Image (tube, rainbow, N blue to C red; front, side, top):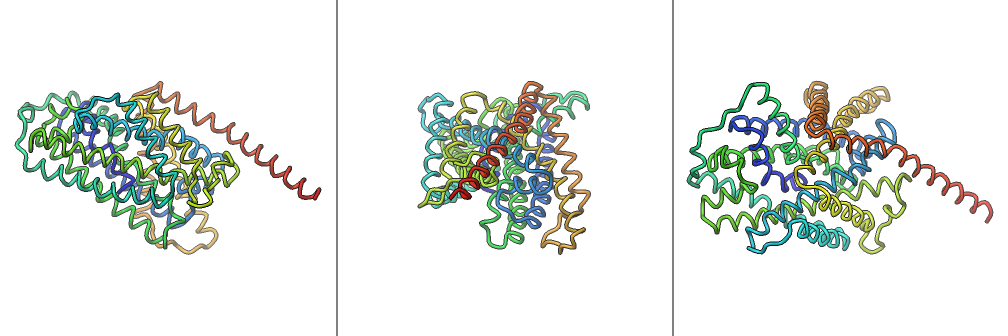
Length: 433
């Protein structure tokens, strides 16, 4: 849950409302997004049970297909999806900072400061980073629970009485719902990052599937209730005209003080999500370096704290660049278009592992995806559909995404050639001694 709940749920209900004008359609896409996340949790839970490797999806793609596919995932994780999610969280925090403090600061500069501070804290050690993450997780749940409770007790605003705008033709509504899913799936994304920590868990084949399924299920319930209270208090018209729906709900409940309270809790929630991403993602870059397909320095661990300091610092630097380069809406498109390419491959990887394990006579793992192959195939098809939707909605972003994926291929072979040359040189030096 700590990897999922972040900035999206506090901002994206408005993003969805700007695309859709009917309350039932808004709730529909949030329920559909939750269903997609649950299907993904089924896939990743069985993958974790079958292949409890450190590196999560990176290891699954490497073992199911080819190391170059895994490298493409790690490459885009650093340059787009994970760093982009960090940038989006930092920008959302900056958006709630002014209502909370009354201090007007350039949001991009504030996001830069937050990213820098949290990168430094996580470089100090795993204990410092995990303690910070645990503290913020409490604030996340408190923020959402408080928002839901206040939403049911608050009096609806004047905007809530405005009749819902016409949704348009059935075809246009379906198109708007498909595009709205980009923002919804961004809010639900993050469940896959728990698999990065598989090798550090006790009994991962048992505990990780449970955590994935219960965690995703809990988030679905919370997210749907958040949208219910936003629609109850603000209505579709009010929801589509605000960038801070949670603050508006609390303002309706207890005035300006309520807006400040929820702003504080949301700010802390987004910081918790940011801390989570900084804590878990560098393990992928560390695994890549150990495989000899990334900079050797990424595999270096601080001798005292055992933290991949260089990997954490590099990820923080990329997140800062994205923050200055792109706005919130553009980041959503980039992150989802990249993530769901590899989610589709994760579904195929499960088919590969099932067939391979069956041929080798390997025992069945402790968890099997319910209704496989139907659920696994459906998740793969939906993932491909999401990618195509982002490409249709933003062709320029699609070109950048495809370009990054294609560039990763020659970069991979440069790293492997360099690694092979270094190994030959090392063997030659050993023989000369």
